[in-house]
Structure formats: structure tokens, C-alpha cells
Figure (cartoon, rainbow, N blue to C red):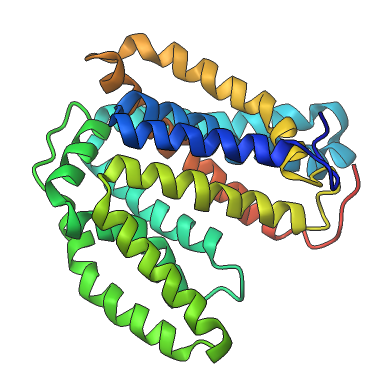
Length: 294
């Protein structure tokens, strides 16, 4: 099997598998299947930080590039995991705020603008709080275990009118040739997060929108010559993906509840722990202007 080229079998097999897993999750209503789908098809996109760090740091520092990258990265992950334990509600709010910015940046392919970041990054967070508040509060409570979350964060609910106004202005200000596409995108968000339970909606968004957008941007970026296809990106993401899974497995005995409950808490707390260093690394990588060679 190849992972690049016009006859590549990777893309249909990969996306066929992702679609199959999502359909099974939606059909069965299984929390466990949804979480495993998020892990299998969503987690690897962030693990490409290691490949990018190798290309940036290896020419300058040789074999010591990995500890230079990994040590601060791991320290930030551990800091976030400890924060979940000590201040779960505060950490949850920080995670949601970081996610709003991160999601918006990943989906905003043209010139970055605050309205677009709010509209595109806010949709996956604000809309579930409005359309399915009780289910969203239950999901957030599971993420912030053992804290109890009776309702979605009030600041996300307060943002909804501002989100609607910003979305209207954003549509009105865009080029006429792009307006229909962006309108359909917003309609898709509204349908997704109003019709599906929060976990299932996030699974579909994370697997089919957020992760592919990140990978596609890296493939199109001439600075990363080893990332030539989705298959090559997955291959280079495997080492850190496996390391993350090992970390998650090591954390598993430290949590209580059923297998699904513990996996849900670990998955989202680990995603939050990975988001902070991932965003900081994105800022660092954004300053690397010249094409690099492996």
C-alpha cells in the first residue's frame, strides 16, 4: 500500500474507516466507541509537532533536538494534568478558552481575523451550550471530574448573542463568491451541534473538520517537505501518538469509575494538556519563515 500518489489506497481506507467508526458510534450511542474514534482519528494530528520540531531543531542542534523539544513540551503537559487535579473547574474554563482560539485559527485559512476566529472557533463550544445545555453540562462535568458541573459555563452562553451578531457581520463582509460556502458551513455547524449529543457532535467535528484542516495546512506548507500526503503525515505522527497513548494508559489506574467514564475524563484532560504546548509550539513554528529541508 502506498501513502502518496494518484493510485493511493490510503485516503479511501482511512476515511472509510473513520466514517464507519463514526456511524457505529452514532448508531450504538456508545461513549466508548466515540472516544476511541476521537483518539484514533483525531489525536495524531497534534503528534506532528515532533516531526516539525525535528526539521526545525535538528539542523541546528543535532541529536539533542529531541530533548530540547520534548522537555518543555512534557513539562507543560504535566503542569496541565496537575492543574486538572487541583483546580478542575478553572482548568476547564482555560481549556475551553484556549480551544475556542485554537479551533478558530485552524479553520481560518485566509488572513487571520478576530471575527472569523470567534465564529469558527466558537461554534463547537457555544452552540452545544445553547442547544443541549444539560447534556453539555454532563459532558463537561465528566471532563472536570470530580468537580460537579450543573450548567455550561455562563461566559459561553453570554457569548451566543455576540456570536450571532459576529457571524452575520462576517457573512456580510465576505466576498460574494465565498458567501454561500460560508453560509453552508454555519448551517452545518448549527445542524451538527443542535441535532447530535455533544460528544457525538464533537467527534464528527474533531475527526472530519479540525484534524484534517491542520494536516492539510501542513501538507500545503513548503517548510515541511516530508509531509507530502495524509498517509505520510500519519506515519510521521505515529511515534508521538504512541507515546501519548502510553501516557494515557499510565494515567488510567489513577482515575475512578467505569471504563467509559475513566476514558472520557482521561481523553479530554489529556487533550487539554496537549493543547497548551501545541498552541505555544504553533506560535514558535509560525516564526519560521524560510522553507526547511530535512
